[in-house]
Image (cartoon, rainbow, N blue to C red; front, side):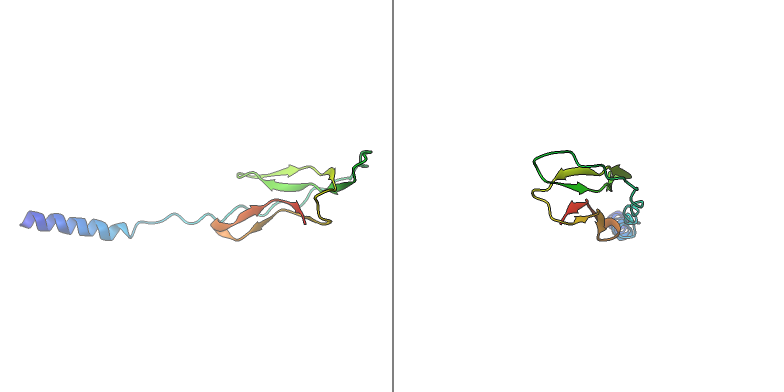
Length: 102
């Protein structure tokens, strides 16, 4: 009987202590992006399709930021205003929203 009681007590202690296990701290999320790079906008190529300048911006790669160079893109399907990429949310729940046309 003492062995059964000791085993049960040991099991209960292990169960109680398992709730005390230290959980890793949530990731603070990536750092804010660097300031945008200065770019000189080249003349647009001559095309029959209307173009609009898409400015360069920082993209999060999962381990750091990489500069995505500005370029001329087709106007069709794009809004009139460019929104730089930004972090939505905070801490471990933050999600990177890439730059896009609005």
